[in-house]
Every structure is written in structure tokens, then in C-alpha cells.
Amino acid sequence: MTTIDDARLLFTGSLGCIYLENSARGLLPTTARDAALRYYDARIAGVAKETDPVFDAETQACESFASLVGATQDEITLTRNVTDGLNIFVTALPWKTGDNAIVSKEVEHPNGVYALYNMRQRHGIEVRMVDAGPDLSISVDAIARAIDSRTRLVIVSSVTFSTGARTDLAALGQLCQARGVTLLVDAAQSVGALDIDVRAFHIDGLVVGASKYLCGPYGLGFLYIRRALADSLHPTYLGRYSIDLGNAHEGDQGGNTYQLMPGAKRFDSGSYNYSSASAAVASIGILKAITVPVIEQHVLQLAKLLDEGLRAIGLPILSGGNERHRSHLVLMGLRQPTTEQRQLFIALSDFLMTKNIRVSQRQARLRFSFHLYNTSDEVQAVLAAAREWMQAQYISASHFK
Image (cartoon, rainbow, N blue to C red; front, side, top):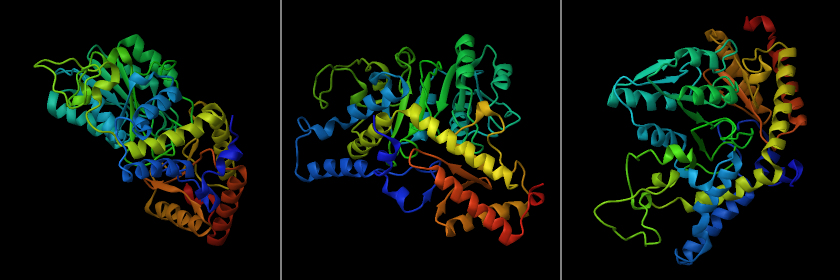
């Protein structure tokens, strides 16, 4: 097993700043860069696709990701990003007019919401909005009340991008399975930092991009579809890779009828992003060497330390109010900030940048997000910078009430 300290040396970007912008994009390790370059070097040399191992990257990436989330390789297909994965899944469902889907618009990412609006426009479904819980988490109870006999799909984020609250996937998965409802999880803010098992949580579909906590490149994502469900779905669009012709060459036409590939492979539609897949294999290899449960324990400890420290100096924290919903994201902000309060959060973010501390902003909230390469010393540096800013600007807790 690789230690976190050893792995941190591969993320050279973490050595030049305090990088807490992981919720927007993770750092790329040097091994991922090297893997992508090996692919490009092979292409420059004109290697044969049929024989060179650089073209095994798609299979290796799917196998690596599958083992990370408790799936099998034939339940994984590569996508371009989270949006791509959401739409591949949602458009393949057998919608009927009058069906409904459930989403928590208040805290959900817009991509999941728009995917459902598209089905409303095309198929006449109802999009049911449920309120978030008191701590701005996705409420399983509210979803349970919204489900009826025409509910086909529930879309949730494993961790909400706007509040940092962790969804109780175990409870939600059991609920959806018992009620015969398909569960699709946007795991952009969790896989790679938090331990997710699609079998244990009864997840039917899961989407993630490689660029955040998988520490991979942009332009690559993963879609998991439970094998039995995938075998019942028909892709919205087809390509030669979607069709099962055994070991026939990819250029072979086949007959006038066709058999879809088994599992999620029926959603493969064309040539793969081999360079990005190569990089992702290297990045995921680091996560697997440390093990995600070890990473999860590390990042949750750091998040709790920062949460408690920021509260102690009087700064408002949206996340972490319920221990069950705590994640590796600490969200500073208010549910409905005034213009003056919004300006204060922006000013703090700008001040942190002068201290070489990187955070991201969403909806007038500051997101402090942790990954394996962050340390407790960095948390203390953030707290010291926040205290310095408050003292210099004569800011107190009263400014946020």
C-alpha cells in the first residue's frame, strides 16, 4: 500500500500552493502526464492499433474504475464528462407520457435538472422538485413522499456541489429498490475521495468526470449502469462499437439486423480518448494503491478540522451541521446572503489568493475541498489567514447575521 505522504510527491502542484480547489478540478499527478505522453509518443512512431498496448487504455480505464466503485468492467462505459453520462442514461430509459422523475433543484447541479427538462419536452414527463433538508442536504424523506406509481427515476448527487452535504445513499438506495424506482447518482464530488460501493448502495447508474477527485484530465468521464438494467436499455444513438459481432473487425458491417453489446458496452459508440484514458489509469492507480477508505478518513478529518476552526472565529459555514451528511467539502456562506455579505466572501477569497491559498466560488459561497495531498498544516494556514483578514478588515461574526 502506498502512503499518502509518498503519493503527495507525485502531485507537484500541491507543493507550490495550498490547493483547496478540488471541487472544481483536482490536481494531475506527474504519472498521469507521463502516461498520456507515452500514448502520444506511440502515435508519433506510428504504432499499430491492433497490437500496441497503448490502445488497451480504454479497457484498463474501465477495469480500474469498476474496481473503485464495486462494479464489473462490462458495467462501465467511457464518456466525455458528467453531462454526457447523465444524458446517455436518461435518454435510454423507456419514458412514457405521465411518468415522473424526482430531483432536488435547490441543491442539485443544473446538468441533472436540464437532462430531465429535456425528457419533459420530448416525452411529456413530470419533473418533481423536492425541498432540501434543514442542513441543505438531499432529503431522503422528501423523496419518499414524492414517489408514486409513475415515478421512473430519482437523480441525486452523492455530495452536493453547492452545499457540500453528503447524501445518505444507503437509505436512498434501499428506498428506490423497494419502490421499484431507478436511482441515478451524480458522483462528480465524491468518487476518488469518498468510498462508494454501487452494490451496497443499490445504485442503478452512476456518472463521474475524471477531472475532479479522480485526478485525471478533462474530456473523459465514466458511466456505470447496473448490468441487468443496461441489458434492458436501448441507446439513443448507435455506432459499430455498440453492436456485438464477436471478434469481427470494427469495420465489418454485419447483417440487416443487429445484436447490442452486453451491459454498458452497448453505449460505446466510437473511437476512445486513449490519451486521457491512459492518464486516468495512472491517476486511479494511485488512489487504489492508497485505498479510498484511507483517503476518505484523511479528507474527512481535514474537513472537520477546518469546519470547527472557521466556526470558532465567527465565519458562517453551511456544511457539516449534521455529522451524517458531512463530506470533504466545507462550504462557507449563507443561504440568502445580502449584497454586502456576498462582497465579503469575494473579498476573503481574494485575500486567500494573496496567501497562495486556492479555493473555488459557487453561488456566492466559498468551497474548501480536500483531497489526499492536503495536510493539517494547510488547514492551520487557512485559519491563520482567515483570522488575519478579519482583524485587518474589522470583520466579526455580526457581519454575517
